[in-house]
Each structure stands twice: as structure tokens, then as C-alpha cells.
Image 1 (tube, one colour):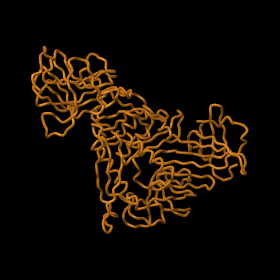
Image 2: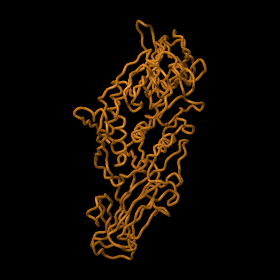
Image 3: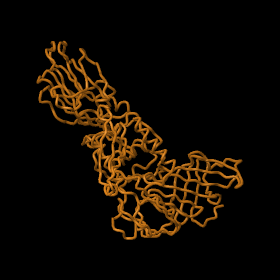
Amino acid sequence: MMSLPIPLSIKLITSKGERNVTREVRDLVMRWNDPGGFASCQIALDRPLTLLPDEVAYYGNLLVHDGRHGGIIWDGRLEDPGRSAGQQGQVWDLAAVGGQVHTRDRTVPLIYVDQQVLSNLDRVDNATPKGDDSVGSTPASTASQEQVLILQFPEGLTVGPNSRVVMRYLGLQRASQKLARLDYTWDAGRTDSAYQVEAVARTDGSLASGEVARSNNWATAGGGSSPRVIVTHWTAGRNTAEWRIIYTGVGGKIGNDLHWGTFGNLIVLSTRWTAAGAEQLTAAPYGSSYVLAHEIVADLLGRLLTSFDGANARIATTTYAIDQLAYPDGVDPARVLDDLMSMEAGYTWRAWERGSNGKYRFEWVALPTSVRYEADTLDGYDSTGSADGLFNRVTVRWRDSKGRPRTTTRTSTVPALDNATPPLIRQGGTDLGADVGSTSAAQRAGDQWLADRKWAPNGGRLKVARPILDLETGRMVQPWEIRPGLIRVRGVLPRPDALNASSRDGVTIFRIVASEYRASDAAATLELDSYAPSTARMLATAQTQTRRIRR
């Protein structure tokens, strides 16, 4: 029986039954982290091992309520109903995971915006005679280093009406997605109205009326960007895009090597879903050739994260234009959210308790900027801060439109390194893989990476075993009620970092990135500014980096 005088109530629920097991609980440990929300919960039950109770089952529900007001303190699903027997008696050790685990349930290909089209084109021979295709710099300008698609009727070739050279993009079809927007610029080796450059939208490669989204007669002056969008230029449901040159004359032999057309700055956008689960099949959502992080968050909720309450999710608006975000080899929502935060470092996500509809409450929000909690070090504090995490230079690895590895180096001013004698250069590295790569994305990710490493964090672990002041609600809250936010800890000698002022005023402000509450000592251990070092976390980080390098 739980002997600690804390007003928490624990309930187990399955399809076979529901039971309040509070009086049988030997200990309770529950944790949340930020980003993520509810992470894990472990309880130990004193009961015989000879019978399998109806309320204990894989994927059964575990709820922790506050007995004073009935509010949910932790919510999740059982994963490991373990059992043990020893000097302490027979014990059921139950482990549950919070809603954040569902961001790893599904791995699927996802194409949001793709500028690496040149490395993902297939030759389509749907008319004779055949022409040539290649990827290179514009033939008319050896000085230009822009990579373009070159389609050509070679000299000496005999052509007839509708002879054409075609390259098809199948990324969306392979990902079971639909085409929302495409764009490109073009050039030609000659001015000739009998030849055209065209963009075509199709369904599974099949022909349909109105398939040509854009058509231009050849001109040596070429043509600029002229985006084409769903419904306005093709019927909703098309999932392939083609770029082609086509001859519309009566026929003849190609007399020189100037019968070519090029396509540059190719870009493809897929249709997205609303957070409530409706696919957006009109032109209005696709007014730009880029995506925003909050649009991707909404899409994940509506498309894949159906265990979350997307219709009522809290999604803060972002502004950074993401010009490359494609995962043709498959990805889970957790990885996508990580990538979004690498470009929008001022935001985080969390999955909390389930509502009456059985779905987890979700939020994508800006990081806090004002102090929420006031605390001191009476119950215990230790610091893990280290200057080993400071860097003033970073190399970002990514892939360009042809799929070739590229690197971008970014620098930053770091006072502690610049003021060392002699000044130090510490250079780190980060990998965007093949999924998020572009020059602007690499620069953005590098700058965000350095911003997180400009100051040695005032990190540490703070133990809270008594009520503390919550400035947001204006009341004293129990340790198990503490949620993400900024906390001012009195009694700690501060040093300058990203969250507090440079003046030494006797108080330090931290960001709470995780909390673990243990009923056996009725205290919450708060992890401040950075996660406490652990083997599990280092292994998880290494696995993430390995996946990115392989991509």
C-alpha cells in the first residue's frame, strides 16, 4: 500500500475492465520532457503473480489523477507489464509511455517541397524518335554553373509531329501523394515556334485532357518563373509531373545542335492536410514555392498523428520559408518535428493528456520568454554546466539538387572562446542528411546550432519537494503539477547565458526541459536548460545522427 500522504490516484483501464489501484502501488515514477510532453510512468504493484488481472494488458491505459480536483497528472499506455518475486514479495512492475511515443508509430515517404528534382527524374519514351537528356549547366552559357535539365533533339535526327523528349518526376506517386504546385525557369538554343517547352501534370503517368500545365514556344531569351497550381492548371488528384520539349511541325531533319531546351530551378510541392484531417485540394494553400513549419505540423496531425486531437491542437504560426523538405526513403513524425525545430529553434512541441474524444492534446508553441515559477535550492541542486559545449564554428552537411554531398560553414561570436588566451576556435558539425538540404536551410540550421552553443548553459538538476509559486496561475503548485516554462531559482550564483541578463543579481533563470516525479520521496527533479547526461540519451542521439548520414 502506498504510504506517502500525497493526493494522487492511479487507474488502470483495458477493454475488459477499469480499476483504481492506488492502494496497491508501492511506488510511482512519472516523467515529462520538452519537447515531447508526457514521456514515461512506472508503478510497482503489490499483488500475486499467479493471476493475470483484467486491468493489466499491453496497450492498456494508465491514468494518474490529482485527488484534490480530479485533473489528469499523467496519461499514457502500458507497454511493459513485467513481474518479479523476491525478498520484497511478488510485484508487478508496470511501465507506460506517454502520447509522444505515437510520433514514432508510422514511417512513410513524405514529400513536402522538393528542389532536388534533378536527381529524381525518370526518362519516359512515349514518342519517337528519341532525343537526348542530361543534367548540366546551360549550354548557351559556359559561365553559368546553375544545374539544369537539358533536353535535346540531336543534329541529324528526323522528327515528325509530336516528337518529344520527356523526363518524369515520380516522387509524389511513389509516396502516394498528390501534386499541388510546380515551378521552373527555362531556356532554349533557338527561337522557333514549331518547338515548345512544356510542363505536364498527370495521374500515375496516364494521359488526360488538360494535362499541359504550361507551354511556351522556344525563344533564346528563355522564360522565367511562372508557377502552376492545383485546380487552376490541372484537376486535383494528379501525382506525377513531366518536363518535356516537343516538336509541333510537319516533320524534317534536325539541321544543327541548337535544338535544345533547358529547365532550371525545378520545384515540386505536394498537397497538405489540415490538422483536422482534411486534404487541401484547392489552390489557395499553395501560394508560395515553400512551406512553413506550422503548415507541416498541421499536416502531420491530419495525415499521420491521428491519435492526437488535431482539430483542437494549439499550433503557433511560424515565418521561416522552408525550401526543401522531402523524405523519399521514409520518415516518422518525430524526425520531421526534430528537423522543423532545427530551423525554428524558438519552438517546441508537446503531447499531453487525452480528452473526452480519446485523443491526446497537442501543442506546437513558441518557447517561453517570461518566468513562470519561483523556487529556491532548499531541497537540493547540482549543476552539470560545462564549457565543453561551446562552439563558434560549425560545418553543416547536406545534399544539393543533384544529390551530391555539400557542406556549409557558419561562424559565431562566442565571448568565452574569443576572450581566451589565445582565442580559441571550436568547430562542430551537424548533418541534414538528404532530406532537408538547401543552401538556405543549411545556413539556418547552422546558425541555430551555434546559437544554442554560444553560452555555457546554467544547467543542472533542481529538486522540488514542496509547493512553489506559479506566476501564470497565481497559486502555489505541488511538485507533480510543474510543467514546461522558465523558473527563477534563488540561491544560485548565475553566469551569463542565453536566458538571463549579464548582471549578477543573485537569481538565475532556467528553462525546465524535463521533470521526473517520484512518489517515494514526494519530490520532482527538474532538469534545467539541458537534459542530464545519460547513456540512453547519448545512444538515441547517435542513432539519429547515423540515420541522417545514411540518408
